[in-house]
Length: 208
Image 1 (cartoon, rainbow, N blue to C red):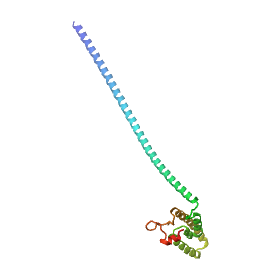
Image 2: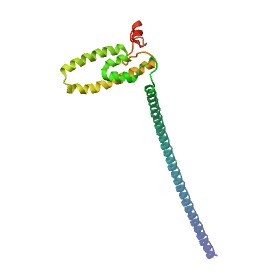
Image 3: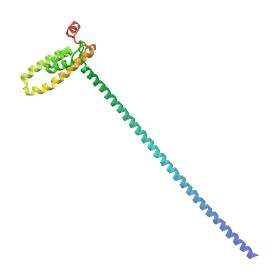
Image 4: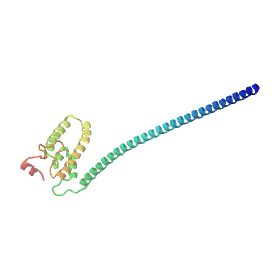
């Protein structure tokens, strides 16, 4: 009996050891599975965070590009508006130059040629007397003095620069006359902003 009890006790101890070993093994497997699950979840969260960061960067880049495109569109619109305005002004000037002067109007061709040949004296045809008369006197004094002091070699280049400018002024004088129906100043304005050149009867007598 004592031997049977001892053998039984040994079997129970062995079974208990086997059960304990199985429990330890199961615990180890469970811990390993939990550890693998945590690692998998951590990897998924890291991947999600990286994906969100990429999407945010892409949205920011698109927003910046859109703003830059809008600025370019505004600049293009502004440039286009300026070009259209300039073209409109050029077309209006072209029509005025192509139009045949009517009754009481000044010919820009005559005004330009007279101003080219005679200098400021040609401005008297259509320009403001307040500018044309002093300029003519100054031009006569300059021409007289220059002919005595400056050699013709130096005088000719000056004439090639001044006379075309005088012709341009003559053309502008004629265009302004036709627009406003009276002589207009190119430099400065008359007091009161009415653009009068000569007071009262003198202006009526001199103006066509």
